Image (cartoon, rainbow, N blue to C red; front, side, top):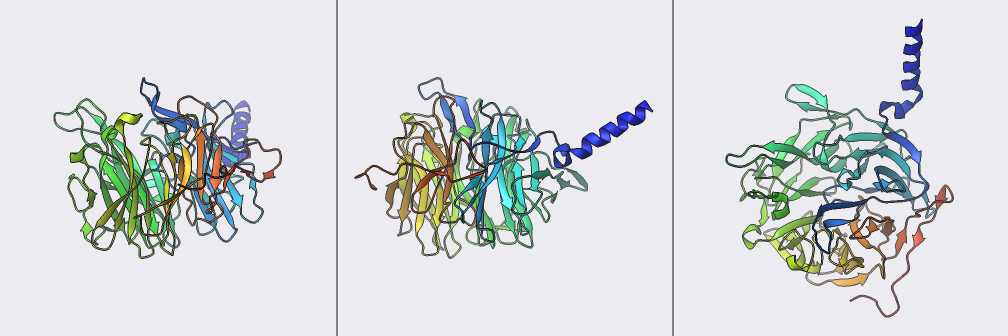
Length: 494
């Protein structure tokens, strides 16, 4: 009789909790305000304190998307790396901006990631039926990854964990680890997700190092995934950033990490490469249409856009966009080294545009930190825009700065600058572009102190450059974002 009682108790425990019972980290709990995660990486033992740091709720550039506009319900859904009030743990948050009412709800705490590492930030996608997917990434193999799906279409109030699987040879195994995820969804086909897996590679004469191998897999239903396929495995690995053109093709722009004796090759990331697929990953091509056999294994190959290794330059890829003809434009930054501070400058922002015959590379602007990340937009009229933290902020030479809107009407030959934020207390960083972007929710980012742990707030701007802060404290279930002070008189543009 006692054994039966225990069994009944166990069954009740795991059924009464519903979706939450699937995993104890799934919370589905409304929060009372919008707070971002503060994170730092690699102490530098100088006045700049870290290689990079700050309010990194929309970090890194290799995660995408953080937000998706859905015309059917006229809402921009978004996720971000949040935190508890003490800033001790990373919470995966989901919410939306209602374009009709101009309001946001209390954000939902989907998951407690049990880390404070912003590399574990979530990304989001929305399928053809309106279900919202949250992909909870890992950073290497030290933490697990999760996939959650909303219980109802177009609803961020509750999610269930999806026990996803992937093929490997003739086996099916749990899909519980992926890093740097970029999720693309095409109606009728499903998900093509680019990601990174970490391997301990053995190179003769070299110590074992964690190689970051860029790969992709596909899924019709978001739960059962194909075997992963590697795109490139050159030396110590890669970082990739991707883009999509009208659901017709998906492209990946990436660098590579050279082997460095006794050092971490990712700190010497260099070169610029590009691949694309027009058949949902069945084959991959160069920008000129030549079929590329993957994975790439040589430094010099047909995917190479520009060689920077011989110049001693690092390459940090920010974004990949397409013009109306479907030709790629890559936004990236070069610098002389990985450390923060003026010694490794200038941090040169550039665009690489394929004109049908060759890559045209042009300078855009400069900034003061390698991790000053921004997003590139190209509209149907051919106007280019970049939302970016390239203006000096209160913590100069640390990650981020004051946010700016750059506009070009001649394919990047000349740019007009409009400053968006002024006299900020913290640096703004990682301005992210929504999928199917709406003019009223044009870029999404966070702020935070560049040199010490601080609070972090969440922001967005519209296409005209008006900036709004999401309410740090919600007094009602729905509230309007808070307008941020406009620029001082007489300081229009540069």
